[in-house]
Length: 404
Image 1 (cartoon, rainbow, N blue to C red):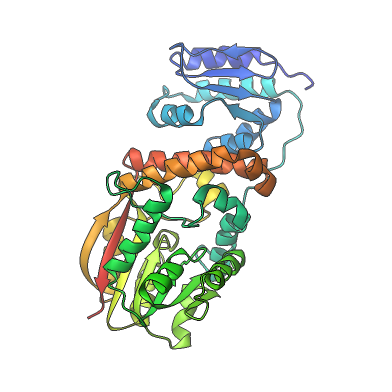
Image 2 (cartoon, one colour):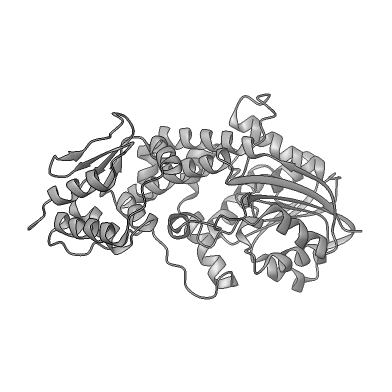
């Protein structure tokens, strides 16, 4: 690139960051070595990576550089551990300015790179029906075949239950999770069951085939619904499984009632502004004595934000894991009696490990189905999520409730 010169930037990094548990390699063959002699290697493959970082300083700019392939790393898991535990020295304004000027010199004259195609910039009112639908479709409407690469044949996209190693395979652990939900709901033959956020139909199929229930499943993703209907047809329960593309907020207008509701991996997408409405809506759909199993991710620390910039744009736009106490408060306000709460954080960490391994084993096919950008997003996201469960940022809870 014209006038690009990495030397000033390398000097500033070495001066401003005297302890570095990582190595940075530049496109011109130069590098800033790790001071510990170990750690991951960041490969800055072109000045466009620096342009991304300058355009959006922080997590978003680095994320764009990585997703676009302008920034490469040799070990994603090492990178996550470093970023999670390394505390860089604070920089005063003079130091920040010196680093920025050096970055500009390293970049040289380069046209501002476009945002990666895998990025979504949500617009409209947060958690409106229209914006929620766009966010869900951005995440899920990649390709059903892509998700099957790492979810496996169960196509269950939520925490499996491993029972301290009793379950040996991902499929066994997902079957155990589905049956745990069914047992907690005390499902009986012929009962009318609702699955809020049914995905590719894993729980509706289980409830219909194993317990003889009549199940309505809802999703905002048309490809998910199509796949779920196909699976119900193949399993011979299409007459007992009704999959709909609709928002949970539209259900009360239909006047339907249910004996039991499963909400699996849905509550973390509702948002603080709608959590009370969510609980009230579910309560209104249950007959007296009806049961609810609310299964969802929560934040543990009250000082942490709901989500980072990278996740907001590339993974789960507008996802908002609330605290367990807030979810339970909403359920109580809606009139539910809470009988039992159980956490499965270590189970989700193990599930994410298996998903990441499955995706790595199918990397070429994943790029064919979803693009190299999407594969970069997913390989990073699955490991970031696992780290969140292991370091005390996230947990996941099932709350068993009933309507008096």
